[in-house]
Image 1 (cartoon, rainbow, N blue to C red):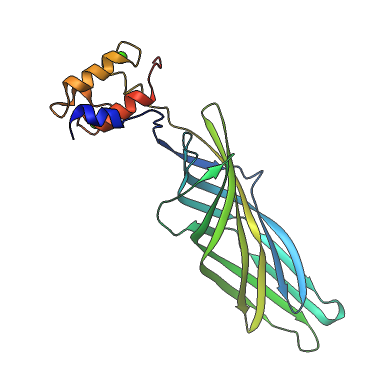
Image 2 (cartoon, protein in one colour; image 1 turned 180 degrees about the horizontal axis):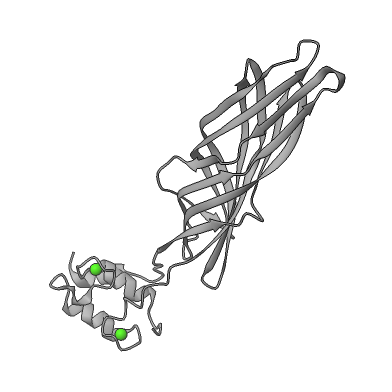
Length: 257
Ligand SMILES: [Ca+2]
Ligand SMILES: [Ca+2]
């Protein structure tokens, strides 16, 4: 395509998509696993502290968000299922249970900082010690069971940005049945994580090709003179001078650096 034809098809309104990656550290004072344990028709709901981190990305131009990873550990949780004179069950999720992301990088749109990842694979691993006691056939004995769940779920959340700090809040629902020594036990609830991290500093003005502190005609003319010949007009860092670089300059047209 001849250059001038190409230029005439290059209109206005280019926005440079730029994903900013951050590792957000979980705030344990705002993060919990709320989990209701149900067995023998009795339910007890308790919560445990969450620690860990979340690898996230935010594109402030398009609103797109990205999840790369999360790695969470859960503090000890003690449940008591009390069946009165019939007895009951004490169960303890040992300190150090984990919830880990088990997928590859995925992105989702957001609006007003609100986003949903529809299918997020993850694993839940932990150890539950239990002690059943009582009469009338509900004794299930004592022992230890390993929780080893690989699942996918929807994760919804929000993000907010203050200065160079981004705070991400996500909710991960939990609803599973597992076998505790021959008895069907349900764990239902959810993990709420609030995590914060620093956004990377934006690159310093790559569209200011001639380094005069402003993005304008001089930069465009540098692109035209280096068109497909050298990297002197390379504004997007791909080592070539072409349409992509014009887009970068136009999108930042008139900006000061
Ligand atoms: Ca310039
Ligand atoms: Ca380029």
